[in-house]
Length: 464
Ligand code: NAD
Image: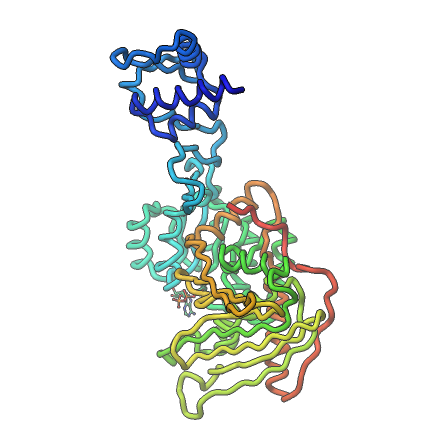
């Protein structure tokens, strides 16, 4: 053993004099010293000489290739056999440093093909660019009511003219095998119709939140996809986002003890009373189904429990044209079977603020902001003796849209149910209907108790 230590020390000195980094040295020693090099060192040890510095040192690589140190730059990358596994590059950062992630995109012919339906803000600002960061999904087609806009977008993203559809000839998607998933990014009232038509055309459906404008519509969407044997996922991006997922793990592991109370807020100021978001028939409601839904859905996701009672309070400023049909404010409470209480509010007429905090008996954990596309930040607090600790763990950012699309693509490729299926959207819709009823009637409204945990979710997504 002593002799081996001595060999290793000598080998390290040799390596350093030959210009090898510590990492390269470890690369060799970690995989067992190459026979030739060790043999040479052993021999020089026996004679009490170190190898000569003038002679080029030759290393024998794993495959037996002999490489003079003058040509030796870095160990060869480990190239996986299967697509989807990352190429392993030479490690160079200390384990104590934050590590990077090497993406492993699938080759084009193995990706799942998408059509985006509706070319508004979310599609143009976020989804189409997100295909550039996705690893398993590709854009192949577009659906829009505006041929001019679609032509421009198709040019920007390399979509063939024959893969551009209107709402009228949407059903012809049936004849396009390149399209496997229809991603619906339309006003809320149109989600049900296009989900059902997509399923009937033989396509899997990724549908934006809120799922629809009523639980009847949600059920019809689920039934249509089931009948056509197609998958249906609701685009709850927060449930795939690393900070929110880590916080959920902390809640479930009782990192700071029992969770007792959660507060959540999602606010933004809107401007245009003509926009579909302010027309009840198109939007279904105001702040609640659009942005308040994030508070509701995320709390359910964190806890895995379903509320058994809700109490809502609704308000709109008299005379404000934006809120003639839909609510400006919804504030609501939710009671969960374990005794946890949540207090939430959502507002369409104040400056943007999107956050939540989970209060447990020995500390709290929260995200502020919690729901934007980027810049989500975690903060946790706990006490130790006289010290109150606050920490801001930084998990970095991932493209949330690429992550959720890739999850759905994986489900399609591996024939698995999605983590956020239609049933998850239906449950949110039922709870929102109870909140509206409570606000209308001015009393708490009870919901049926759901005993199973994570009752409406599919198998957990793969963590990358
Ligand atoms: P938007 O108004 O910017 O885009 C809607 C698109 O639908 C437009 O291209 C519009 O031309 C088209 N459209 C077709 N028929 C229409 C009609 N009758 N009236 C109005 N528009 C019509 O809206 P958006 O912000 O892109 O939202 C689209 C969907 O995505 C909504 O369901 C919304 O809730 C959801 N969304 C989700 C997120 C998220 O983070 N997951 C973010 C924003 C929006």
